[in-house]
Structure formats: structure tokens, C-alpha cells
Length: 124
Image (cartoon, rainbow, N blue to C red; front, top):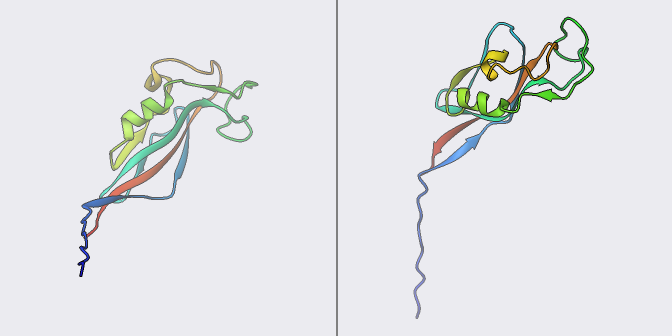
């Protein structure tokens, strides 16, 4: 009679990702940070610095701006370099942080960030 062999595999860990979080910070506003619970780290899923919404909807500022589609091309890379893999970080929110380039000259800008908190949980 043939015997069955059972294969046992122990997985050292798996990743846990929390529901996405979002934050909008107006240009040159008081610096703001994002954070995760102890043991978890930040994973930036999207970031844009510029303006994609009308003035009346988010971060109203002086003057008017008809172009609601101007974003610094390196937005995700800049915020990711500042925050990815850390448990807390400060979100950059001015032209200097994004390479001294103004993606929307004359407009009041903002940074829009979405992120998850990712952690390792042991499985035994």
C-alpha cells in the first residue's frame, strides 16, 4: 500500500497593507507629517505637487488660475524619497522641495499624497 507524504511549509512572514490614506497640504502651509503605527512603514502610492482642482475646491489662494492640470513631474519620486520605508515623515510642500521648479507659475499649489502603511506579520 502506498503512503501519502505531507509537505509542511513554514512561511516566515507576509505583508499587511492598511487601507489607503490621503492628505492634502497647501503650498507653504505649516509642515505636516504622515505616520504609521509602530512596526509599519509608509508606502507612497501617489503624489502630486501642483494644482489639479479648481481654486474653490482645494487650497484657495490669491489670484485666479484657469489651468487645473499642472503637476511637477517628479512629485512621486520626491515624496517617495522622503517617506517610503519610514514610519513617519514630513511632506514637502514648496517649490524648493520639488527642484525649484514651479509647475504652475502664479498659482497657489498643494501636494496631494495617498499612502498605505505596510508591515510584516509573523506566521507560524
